[in-house]
Image (cartoon, rainbow, N blue to C red):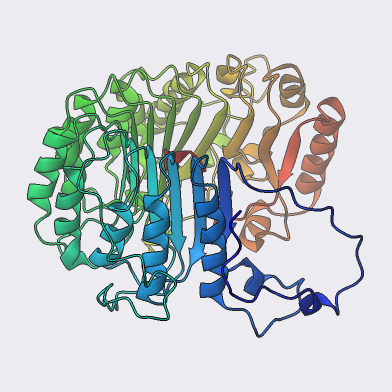
Length: 546
């Protein structure tokens, strides 16, 4: 039986001032663990515990690693989060432990060290991993550019591993490794680090890379080597962004119709034509595309995804709040070709609904269409074709359409939030027998029987929608969309003052409240009052970890 290392544990008296609690049951032996997750810094951050000045991070980590080594014969999943790499002894401690885990399949290490990884630190961890590894995710939570790097040797006499000899790093490839996440590191070292990794990952399928831009020299040869030596890659993730010219280049060099998942944050598309060609190269394999917090995504690039990717299941585009107009699809491009992505389960896209700053006034003032201009009639017909495209996606479970419009030509960089905008006519039913010529396209959505969430610009408090929604529409929602559980019909007034002021007040607001109560009585399981503000962000799912 092995014993814990000779470091002082946190004494029970450290929490003596806390309220008395029932005694804890004895811990099991912890000798045949297959999975271990340790959050090293959690004690210091836990407000429920009395501060303990004797806490030592390195000693705590060393005790955790002792437990890891104790289970080296059975451990297959290891997660160490919020590490602080304070000295080379800590790095050696982790590396020596990893090299002993001969059954390890999944490794996740996250640091909060206040600096990016150096090449020496990252390669020490990576080349200490056992050949059995399938998933290796090494990440840092703080991106500070100043770095220091010391020699991992010599080992001092007071170090626990003083009699272990020098570190022996693995030289053979990780033949089973399928998922790799590379942490943020100095740009000057990124290319050389990636070159050293590529030849050790011949079976790689899921790759998460740090920020790619022109300050990281020598990336072009890396991209070419990546495509040649890691030909099984089916998932690409850029959590911190990627310069527009690199992303399509990587997609062009990968084997045709091999990429299934694409995620990129802070993407800026300088050349939509090249991106369209890259999308076409993988149009029959792409299952999931997510471009979030983008500065620019061409309308034609979004169109290419919708009209070429037949197997697509999830598609999200989300621009920055201040640049929302540069990451949206125009209404004209949305209806130019038929959408083929009929397997879509989730769709989130901003739509530039019209370039006309006086748009939709004709919908309220003259719903009979008698005084409409040719441009207004054409715009109404385009809206109908767009809603028909949406209604054809019968597998949809989440629909998040955000209408984009510039409300004031004098302030070109000011845009209404998606909750101040509307999707004209989409929340009203057509009624040719009514005296005022009621117009609407709500029935276009009748085939979305799997839809669970309806988000974005589906707001009843918008003036255009509020003018024409009534009990017929309430009855329609009561009898259609049977799977619907969330619909962002009514924003909370105290959550967004702009939405509140834009919606107006008085009898029309009271009428909307009465309609809300009527729908709630008919569909009690449906949540129609939401708390998100106009600064709502798309939250990336952990599924991107591969």
